[in-house]
Image 1 (cartoon, rainbow, N blue to C red):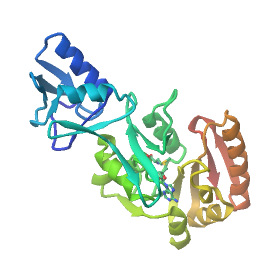
Image 2 (image 1 turned 90 degrees about the vertical axis):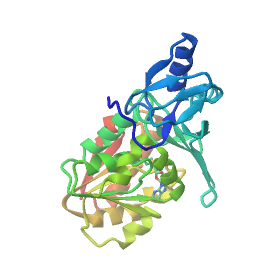
Image 3 (image 1 turned 120 degrees about the vertical axis):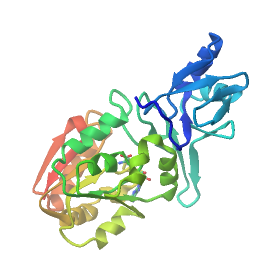
Image 4 (image 1 turned 45 degrees about the vertical axis):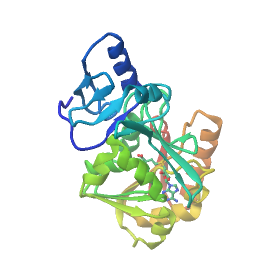
Length: 286
Ligand SMILES: C[S@@+](CC[C@H](N)C(=O)[O-])C[C@H]1O[C@@H](n2cnc3c(N)ncnc32)[C@H](O)[C@@H]1O
């Protein structure tokens, strides 16, 4: 674990608040704690009014109690106060927030988690989505979200083009320590808009790999349509592959969606479609 703290914001969840409040209860005056949801650790000073981080950022004890009382939220620390990482998009009428897990946080869109958090954490979820696609080349990531799939792909690929519908999601990602590489890697190209529209515009055979990780069907039905899949097929180069996240194949809705997505991918021209149950998705070959 890194011992230094950089200029990024301090972001805390109930896990860190609990450890700090317990240390105060034991009468300690210093504690090693993560300032970035578990990515690194630093020594902080426990003072009468609150906690002081090495970059001189402070947070009041009353704010830490508030964080502890909100275990489903992540908080950004500014001017001794804690503010929930959440935003509402007027354009799309959706509420977004960052929800902590034991590792990387997930994104909640109107209460629905955008990564797996039961049994598998968001990092392992991402690893499984990516594994099926290797080796890489030029990648299209259809749904940026917190950027985890884009980041993991970009570590191995030449270039990743990632598309996010709602700029509000990227505001949340900017505050997420686990999303930093999305904004620092020069082989990630970020586009804002509907990936359906971009898919119409990209020239034929633009990508070696496509990672399609859409929100569930009820939030984005057109991203599950044969018409969209036809464009994804057109965009792939010979030898290309598409990974399509679908959801838990052992649940009733996941089973049905898997079946209908596989059928539509074949209608769209994908000659081979294989199930990847551990990754909750399908791998399709043009
Ligand atoms: C399941 S999340 C993606 C998670 C992401 N792959 C990651 O690793 O963090 C789905 C994302 O797609 C975005 N989205 C919804 N409709 C979209 C569209 N038509 N085009 C592009 N992005 C879309 C949502 O705002 C959300 O951020």
